[in-house]
Amino acid sequence: MFEKQTYIQRRKTLAEKIGSGVILLLGNDESPMNYADNGYHFRQDSTFLYYFGIDFPGLAAVIDVDNDRHVIFGNDYTIDDIVWMGPQPTISERATDGGIDHSLPIAELATMMHEALKQSRGVHYLPPYRSENKLKLQHLLFLHPDHIAQKSSLKLIRAVVSQREIKSAEEIVEIEKGVDLSVDMHVAAMQMARPGMTEAQVAARVYEIAHAANGEMSFPIIATINGQTLHNHYHGNVLKSGDLFLLDAGGEVESRYCGDLSSTFPVDTTFTAQQKLVYEMSLHAHQAAIDALALNAPFRNAHMAACRSITNSMKELGLMKGDTDAAVAAGAHALFMPCGTGHMMGLDVHDMENLGEVWVGYDGEPKSTQFGLKSLRLAKPLKAGYVFTIEPGIYFIPELMDKWQGEGKFTEFINWTEVQKFRNFGGIRNEEDYVMTENGARRLGTKMKPKTVAEVEAMRKY
Image (cartoon, rainbow, N blue to C red; front, side):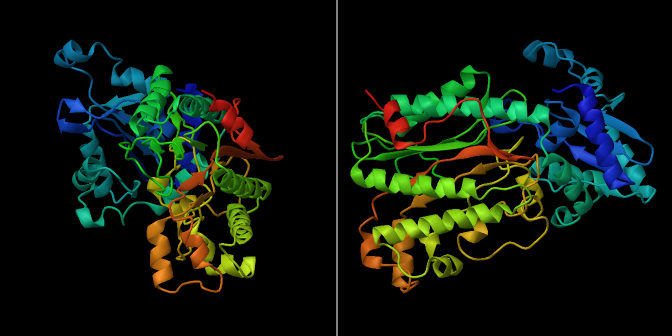
């Protein structure tokens, strides 16, 4: 937790933005894997954590804007709980740490919400992403399950986004811890991977680094020789000489702030000539995106710079042809980069994704429906305090190649015969984390993830 004044000020600002009514924020509960007492790792809701700082299951909170009253709801441990899980602070003590003077048993929450409804007071809540919280909202607010998401408060969504998107200096400190932990994870993977190992063995080493630092993974690890599959969580393949290995993994520190990095490296000690050529082309796109970053400039500029760089590189390889800008405008480049260049990051690895990309990444402006561009999670102008990733890549996806070639798509931009020669190449991406400042973008972390060919190959000596 930060100092209690941080949370007091955050809630004060939120209440001022909402103006009147009641703000209901639900924490997360324990989530059982296969029976009640065998639970998944507990992760508190990030917005609840942001405003209250209490990393404990089974809680809810109300900010009564009109009466300036803030209440935490939860149940203290019974002696039976203590026997199994040890002594814990009371709910009142946890509330006090977050700067809240009032706490009540969880059963009292329904009474307060029902009274607010009787008085026709506006109740603001966020769209739930967990089933148990949908059920709670159904009970607390007498809502039909089909209407819960659509009746969530857009005013609250926008207020939360406007606060959480600007990272304070103390938040940046925690995020940089997450980035440094992530660097350690990637360096360990680069140093240990060998032909004959399984993807699972490399993934296990990455997990070990995070857990040994009393951290967690900020998302399920991607550790694969099939880098052309963007979110590949299968770890059953054996590493072979000639393979490229793609690792996308981030560490989450005790404060729950996180990092998010990607690396691609050869399973052998060096890249092949072809791997090196495409790898350096991916780095050119990466740097093009970075060079396009500027205060108050749309992040979409960085994405389009990466797209143009990849198109030009594919033209150098003979895989694409024609006018670069026209090819990018048509979306032909998405054969090789069918994703976005980055996303916001903070307490969530895709920060506030549960609140909707159209609000987090677009300020309510409509997203593109074009293949590739529709996957861009962040497009709006970059304010000081925004934390985001840079992660363009180059991917050769056989199924996409075959589909588009079979449909006769983009023949004016794509040399299909040459493209098919790369169908078994795989995929490459590098990812780094940045913060926008008044003086421009700054790469986060005190440690540098190996990125150039020379830096990566130096890690691969065995």
